[in-house]
Image (cartoon, rainbow, N blue to C red; front, side, top):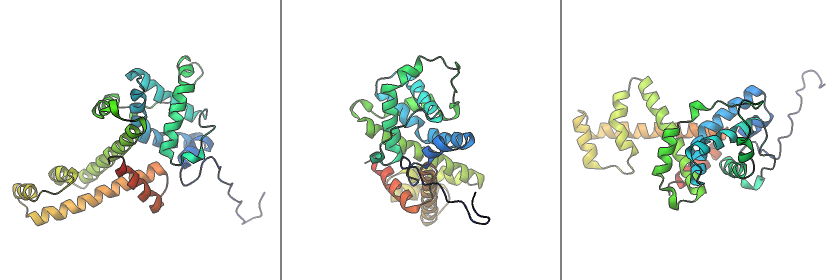
Length: 255
């Protein structure tokens, strides 16, 4: 036991899970049951849809794709996978993709032979599993000529932007700005401002074009803030450098 008033030294971080990259997985594998479940929920929220699209790209049926992703997250929670994670993979996003593909090749068929409920902990993922939306995203991805990694990264980025946009809308509604949100959402999502369209939109709303531009600029800054907050959650860090790096990766996914 340590001396009174002297804190015990922190345990050395596992070399398998660099704290700046894989802390969510570290908590799934090494945390309390409550910490593990909370970390798994964050992973499911961010990666369920991209992994579903990967399974569909691998020619699985809708039902098999859903079961494969379900089984993968259950194995994560039971700490039965990622025993041999490759530190060279680097980012958590790529690690999960490699681990999922390994799971599908090596473990999924065995796992599906086990009847659920037969002594195996079942992870309830319904709040994260919008099958219809995920299937629509997969079909819209024009996936026939798309590589697995490109599809996966695009779906990760698209899902993150969708969550950020939803958080933005909820924030505007909470502030009583729903009408402002509905006015500005279309120009917000356009890549370039069209002076004529913005002028017409401002006139229809009874605003000057200058006032509309100011509000649109603020909304874009607010949206970026929501994106950065989502990245901070999925990276499990407040490190601005790591968040900026991941933001760059996010936009690369649509290049």
